[in-house]
Image (cartoon, rainbow, N blue to C red; front, side, top):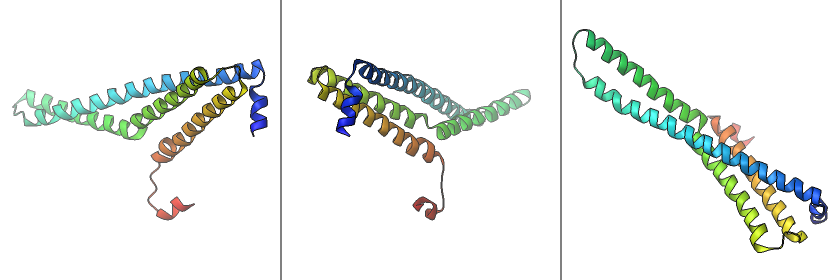
Length: 163
């Protein structure tokens, strides 16, 4: 593996490839982290605000036409709170947010190690950079599969977990 890795980073074109690959994943992680963070806070804020207002509306005691409006608002806001909570549970923005943030931090650490601790022209520095970059991407892929894809499927039969 070491010999194969040396040939992967030996030429300027291959170094450009690995640098571009690293930069793509850093940009990808940054954009997805930012997006999931915003979606998480929006859905959570909507769920909390709607859930706080509903009990207040239930406590109001209006008669006549106002009663129908209050009932409609109570029903509508309770649905909004339930839907926002369901969106948070299904899409799990918080888990994705932390997943992308971790990927970005690990990729940035690999680049800082390349820059700070060694001469970028030395093959060992590039090999370490490539290994760290690939390890971060592989960890992200494994975590995404485990936490986001498989985590969204709830299996109730313990025998199914063994296979």
